[in-house]
Length: 232
Length: 295
Image 1 (tube, rainbow over the protein chains, first blue to last red):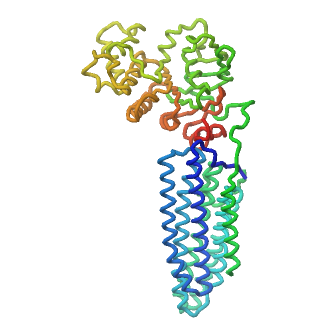
Image 2: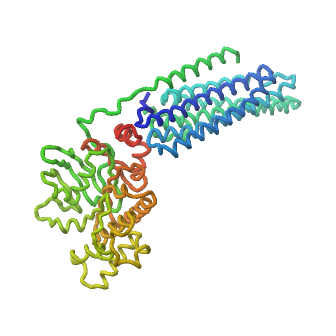
Image 3: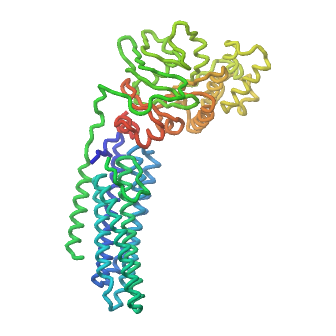
């Protein structure tokens, strides 16, 4: 794990501002994690009340995006950050975008949960539970890696997305098979498909977070690579 | 998916915030005793070459074994905290240090392969080839025209009045001052505003067609608009001239230069392309300085 120091500026206020955007991003990360968890729960527990609350709470996630973006903008305008500081501010401003999109996916899942709760057929819970667990795990690991600026963990997490993509493909094929066998279930399966699609997207956004962590700490850009196999 | 996962997530976010609170302290001022300059000091297209240069003021050593090439038709910025030796090194490039008593330069400085400290070298001619612009605008107490015409006259670049007029106009145009002073060339140069005076000094420096221009904090006495004009000018001049600029303003170094050299306590710590220095410096000291952690 490499060292990254964000303290000790001559202007102490600058330390505090950088610390603030990190703390806010972590808070937003925690919030989004909870949203994702609740949205998955609302499907597998058939709990439309929980789904409603996820949809309601998404507004707060959006507000946090604006708040953090503004804090980043202020730092750039006032401090003209350079080197690690600059990379951190850029990273936070991008990460906020990814977290907000994960929040949106959670909201979409919650909307599907409400539709699904009106149906009797239990098909799809296994798929959602399985991919949901993987999506929560990659998000959790990415946020942990960010909190510690741990590039090794970020790279491990980055590679986790590949498995999610494979699981998504598998779930997709199963769904198609199921629809062909039982055309009456098509509408339900399509709802489930939207959910697993959202979970797959969560994996992509978490992967982006990992790329940004590596960028902050090492200054190397690992975007647009399927797997990162060089551990320097 | 059970509720135990929720509590696990909560625990995780607790440890995360604890980690944020502790904040690893890193020792920025690591040892520079056995220093090696990091980055790319050498250039294939070097106009000037500085090799193992040490500069002394009496017994005090101001520069320790610095080696760096100055690339032709590029801007190199020298940055570092006060007293780091950047101005000293800049001044040794046209032997301005000769005028300071007790100042000695060890090592090799050459331009186009010619040793600048060779006894056979004509210092006056050297200073025509390597012009200099200082922190405070210092026009001669003469007319705007004479300020610019002075160099070409004493260096005997021309004896025709017509050619001299052309040199004066061309230099003032290149310094971006012509349109502002064309109607008052006979008025004193000292009557111009600070920014105009500095551009006049740049016009005076380029009137003798130097190959290299040294600038020692050329904008530190100017307002932001005048500074922007000079910076734009530096950009334009770099197409035809080789420029070395010393600046305290890091954003300025980031804006105008192609390469940046960072000095610390007389040691050349890092030389790298400017975009790298300001986004991903190689040395911890450079990082600490440009991010405002000491200076």
